[in-house]
Length: 225
Ligand code: E4P
Image (tube, rainbow, N blue to C red; front, side, top):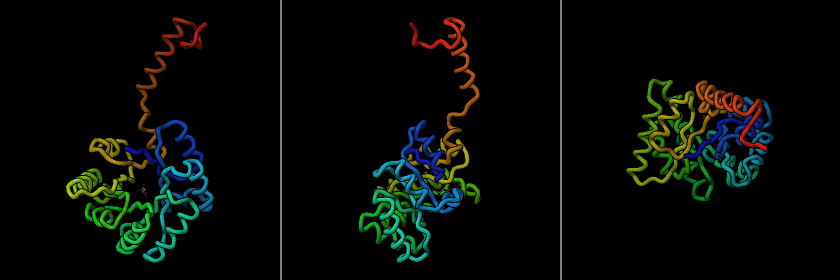
């Protein structure tokens, strides 16, 4: 299971890469807007951080297939051909995915809300589909169940497209998705941090240190003379 950062704040990304086993970065237009910076300034900095072959997802904005294709080519020129081009799984997006997949462009079909939308995007040639777990929950559906259905449909139809579960708001959603065995999840920095945040764990670690200091003195560690 790949653990991806759903954010474009370069210092947050640096910090998370430093600490956690991170496999890549996803962005979207709203995420880029939050930085207040020029899109390619941010995206190039992220590309530098993740390396030339690292996993970076950047979204095309256009609505028409021909324009999406032009944007995809431009993004690949600017950020490298390893970049996954995120394309909404709408009819014009699917048309663009069909063309771009033929020329080896890496594609993440995004804004996926239903299993059959995922199926069509996968058949068109997307490498990833990105179902929006929390947004589906907010519509009164179940994001977790939807991802389960996509997984079942892909498995039962021999589809190799990967699932990149997206749009999470809490750790339980992440746990339920991971339980079913998933290719990748993309999480906001706060949510990644929250996976390890636990007062009982902090208290246990504090107790280990204070017990050891009683034995060996203040500031003592297992490095001893
Ligand atoms: C993936 O990159 C999606 O665009 C993102 O996870 C959507 O998240 P949101 O529903 O919190 O905006």
